[in-house]
Image 1 (cartoon, rainbow, N blue to C red):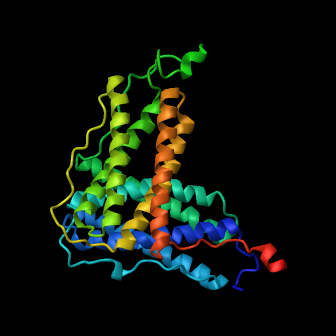
Image 2 (cartoon, rainbow, N blue to C red):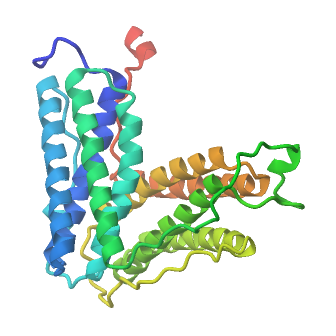
Image 3 (cartoon, rainbow, N blue to C red):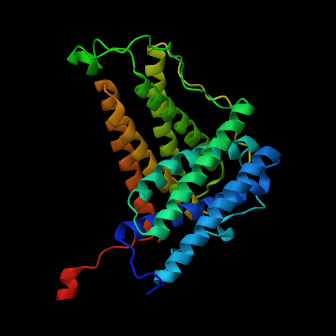
Length: 331
């Protein structure tokens, strides 16, 4: 037993475990981006992100050691091939920090509200602050470099209005215009899927294992379908849709990442994607949007199950800490 008289709860162990795996993977990927990136401004943000993630791994390791909890098997430099030519151009490193910090803010906030022990809560509150600061710096630099795509503008409202008709939620025949919450969710869903497509494009060039290659190709198709669905909605609403401006993938065919790192990254992205689409579903009051979101949640869950099976089959799936089997113990 460690130095704390108050034991960690299941939610605190679960949160620290998940954060360890996430941050350990981030250290590995950021090592790769730092190795190749030539842009001094982007390199500065990558370095900051790297140091923050490395610090989180060290702090969680300390808590686990203090409590006598085994450290999860993570990734290391053996999962990287730094001699491989760069797979992405410099700007993708900035997109990576931007996308991961956006997702990290959501994930870490969920964990933070389930913690109570002071050292653990302090750690996660600080983690939320650091992730938010990274997001802020990445967004500012994207704006400076002209690569941040702003969500659609609408005229300012000139009065406060109330919903007067239950048909407000109708989305299949006579539709009302999208409200600001719905526009936001659609826009950022498209943006997130553009990032996924660039990642898939790069990995499809370098992954040699047929099963993993097919898995990535299927993920790319799901992202393309989401982009087409939601861009069509924006176009029909005359909100012009969202167009990807940069092509960040080189022509390298040598993989810089281990197969385990690639599949684990996809497993992690699937999990946050279901969370974010679920959030979009909860905010969307038009029935056509709800149907699309429900369809894609199901599709991603089925896709994620394939990745899970592949990881289990290859001995890559870490089992999260779990409650004891009381019936077995009692017998």
